[in-house]
Length: 148
Image (cartoon, rainbow, N blue to C red; front, side, top):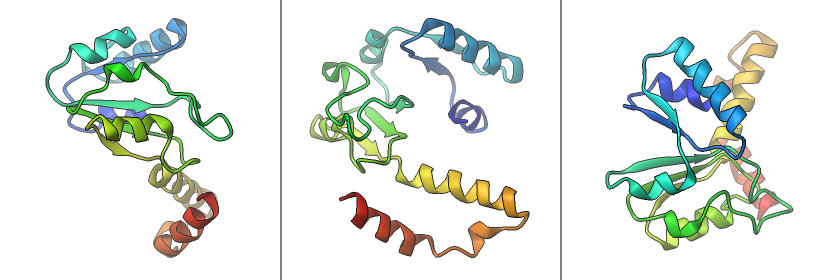
């Protein structure tokens, strides 16, 4: 889903950094089948070679409750030009995001993505725009209280 969203945005290229090379190669093959955006598989060390702003999206469960001390990459590779996006919503701010923020990176947690996926699913299941009827801020506030 994230690769599809990136394809439909204004990114110039996509680099996949995956713990399993076979899964990374499969994703590269899929993206190439539907898009002309340059895509490749990179090592974790590649992240630090970029001098321009660089978006890094964590799509792993590393750092999710109850294993909140795990991080998806070497934190020494993070710098102030990075934008870190985590798909994890529990905890609201993972160790990866907290550390990235301390290192000067911009951070985005996974709670909004969690809600967007749920509302999109409800729209499909019920055949109507449930997402337009939901008071999202009230739900978010309640969930944040539960998670904190």
